[in-house]
Length: 376
Image (cartoon, rainbow, N blue to C red; front, top):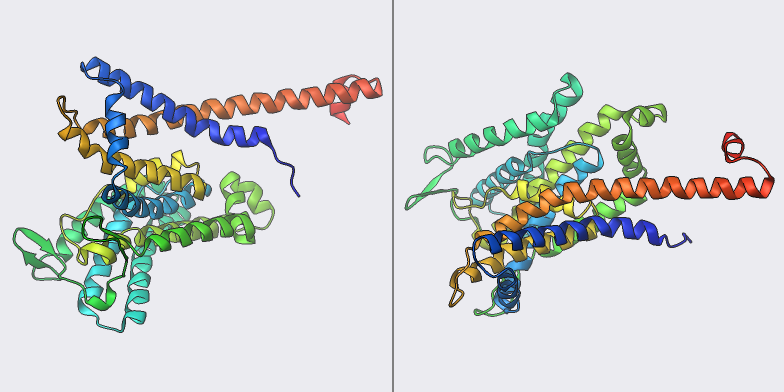
């Protein structure tokens, strides 16, 4: 069995903790500068989160964030920056809604078909950037950002009334999906709400993500290629194939991220379908350090800030702007980048110091200088 490495655990935890503490401290400064209490907003949000209906909203929202962040994390582990998760998620949800509105199969067939449609759509959209990178050397950052804009326009075109759109008031929708495609959830009563059934899909994807990356040859090749394409190629790994594969998998997972809401509640794609999920997922993946457990905690934190912050608008006698939560989210992302780099440098220095101490100890035991021991 592997020896428990306390220092490694400390380094893994230090980054997120420092980022959170820094974000809270900076948010408190903003509150003080605006003449408000530096602590009351946190108390109000925590109180709001004790209500059962808010907890259901947090869990449901976290499931969307979690799946999208896994898609981002797959790219990060390959040293790829898939900034196009938002476009892949929205296009995947829209195509799934269209198919669900026009295809009627038994439920045990309808739901798997809809999931395959979402995955294929997301993988196709991400694959465009992957092909451009491996064939033309186009940066995936530039390609995926442009594909986000194209996806927005394409969705607007395909949801027009003369294509697949159904006008409902002032809202363009894809029409209500067949009931056989609705994914049942856990009904906790009319006063509490329903937990999306696809929350369990998010959990399953997290387990598969960990197993594939840490217990398979493919996962090792993917991580090795992300660390160094040259070293991976020297060991027989086709780096270009791994880049394309990682982009396809990342896009496929991103395509699934809208399904908890689509199949569990909305049952149609419309202009009111949430946008910006992919960009939020980037911050969540960073805070979770691309670890499925860390991403889960980060997704719950983000969902908590989203769903508990409306309580700030109704606080008495002093109301707080709910945008405080948005400021805190932005500060977390900002602090994550700085804290992770600081922790990385500190860890590197600790490692160098430990190696130096080991060389010195070996030299003392053999009556040699540390340089002679290192040379051997």
